[in-house]
Length: 180
Image (cartoon, rainbow, N blue to C red):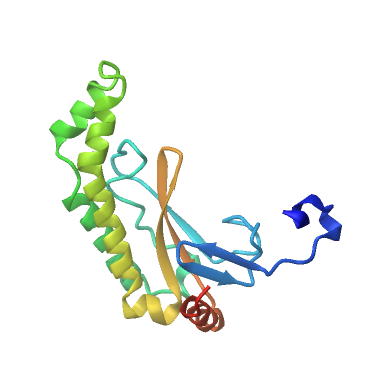
């Protein structure tokens, strides 16, 4: 707290490290934002299916972009994103649940939306997270340093595909193994 009271120029330099859900991105300033010029290895796959309360979509964009050419082959990307989309669709709530949560929302003051969100859509979200973990564990992703991540913003979500430079992967693994 003492250092925070000092003017910015009088503060000692802090380590350049950003933690993100179990990942430590070495060499990236802690205040860097996604999509900033320092982080060019990011591709955002927007939701394109049915929107659910809370921001989850039934499917995500499966378009192979030219930026991914040096990351993954087009076939490997299509297989991975189709596995993620299929996992979500298999756990997607039925039409009556969707209609109940949407139509009854004004009459129940949002309680119906919360109920369906926590009972039904949470299964689809968990399936998406598990499919993304499985995709990240494949040899194609491990060898190329590609990581998929489901990111939620206010009433919206997207899948962020990032690539960590091969030299940085070894540094991250050592950092994650060491006790903090």
